[in-house]
Length: 88
Image (cartoon, rainbow, N blue to C red; front, side):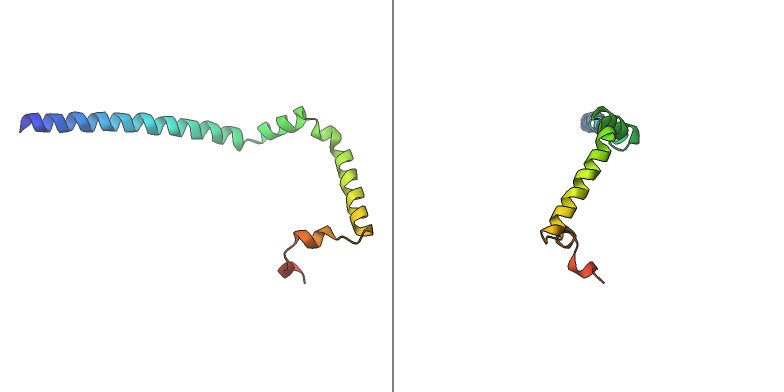
């Protein structure tokens, strides 16, 4: 009886240790990903590295010209994007 109890307790201890290692590794990965993905500094640095802030006026101008051309051609892109039930 004692050897059965000893074997069960050893198996349970090994299983708990294995479970701890797997869960701790997963939690560590999620914690690091959370810090990187939901940190505003990460996105600010990426936008700065890609020089988006310098190109922002040009991008806005391109979009305004594109919208004007679409309206001139009779294509209202806002109707394609918006759900028809949103209209008043």
